[in-house]
Amino acid sequence: MENIFHSVRLDDEKCQGCTNCIKRCPTQAIRVRNKKAYIISDRCIDCGECIRVCPHHAKYAVSEHFNEIVNYKYRIALPAPSLYGQFNNLDNVDYVLNGLKRMGFDEVFEVSKAAELVSDASRRMIESKTLQKPVISSACPAVLRLIRTRFPNLIKNILPLFTPVDLAARLARKAARKKTGLENKDIGVFFISPCPAKRTAITNPLCYDGGIINGAFAIKDIYPVLVQTMDKLKSDDINPMNDSGIIGVGWASSGGEAAGLLKERYLAADGIENVINVLEELEDEKLNDLDFIELNCCTGGCVGGVLTVENPYVAKARIQRLRKFMPVSCNRLPEDFHIDLLGWTHELTPSPAMKLADNVIKAMQMMSELRKIEAELPGLDCGICGAPSCRALADDIVRGYAEKNDCIFWAARSENEDILPAPFRKKEKLSEANTENSNDFEENFLKDD
Image 1 (spheres, rainbow, N blue to C red):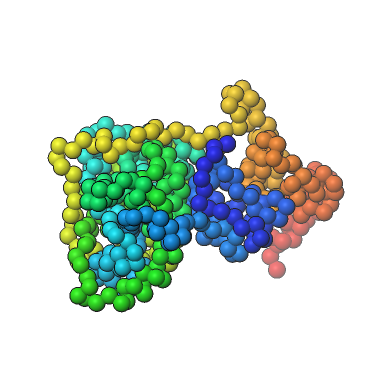
Image 2 (cartoon, rainbow, N blue to C red; image 1 turned 120 degrees about the horizontal axis):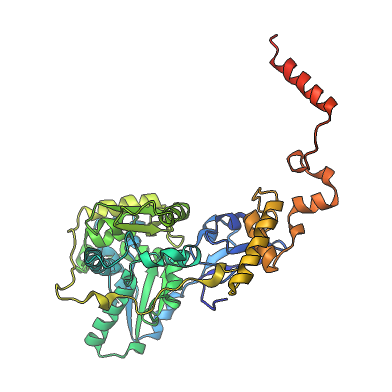
């Protein structure tokens, strides 16, 4: 099992064992045992779906407390473009940026600015024809972890570039060192995040070394104080700080990244079920005519993250209105820039979470046993056993984590089949008398009045 940090946590005291979460988890990382949910660490991708659906608020995401910034001499905020969609009647991003400085940050570096640079780098890499098409965006860390867990054959299609927030952190930190003369340890860089997956990626990055970003604040935690601060700002207090355009801010919602490539043959999907459907079709080679695929686990894109405060569709509409007042783009890479400088430093490898065994022969034997057990189970996928599906229960049984009697239908059949609902009882051959009665019934039923 991988020893990794997770921002999604479980509050045992609040959990009622209701099984809502096990149905929504895209990697089947949750089980209910002894009336309490349990998260399988090496399968969790921190997408936040369990937070979204838990009626008892037993799932939550951890993030830094705002007082953390006092530990640094120079403090930099990295606002996600999805932050702009949280405010009603916002027609000038500078209100948000100046509000953040009033809250205690010394500098604000827009993630949307870095997004425009990543868009430029992506266009160049795709045009170079060195990538396997269709190219899959690497911007959503939950999608990245989903692919390495459930769709490892598609790793070769992923765009091997820094995400906008990682690039923004590097550029902001470099500028701060030059401006202040301070060492890295004295500069605090904090991301204002819409989702727990990005919080996890900061602490436990997959494809490059961490330590560039010191922490993340949830948008929902920053929002109340930021709104009050912005309300106190007067027009004379607003300094021009916005340095991004339509392409950068468009990354906040689904389709924004793909549209920024200025190409026609692309697909953008959001919502975990839709993402999985697209990845399954990709594995079946049904989408090979596309150049680029943008995938976001959250509905609507980053504006739908579970750490935001506004309805994702409302936030998306606000982003679209806000972009009308912006230039197309404010940032491009130099023509002689080496794209490799923005590339991953570590190779993305498949997760072993779903492997039955390292030994191929043993894994095949376990798979054969798994299929046999699955065929004996009712196939209802009811979740009463605490697993999300009958196949997942069979998998748990093979691994030694569960027993057949955890299925109530299996237990009832083995003890007293008469208590089972009719569809699950053994079908006996009809006697001749029963067959005749059956035929009489059909004749009477079909007979005209």
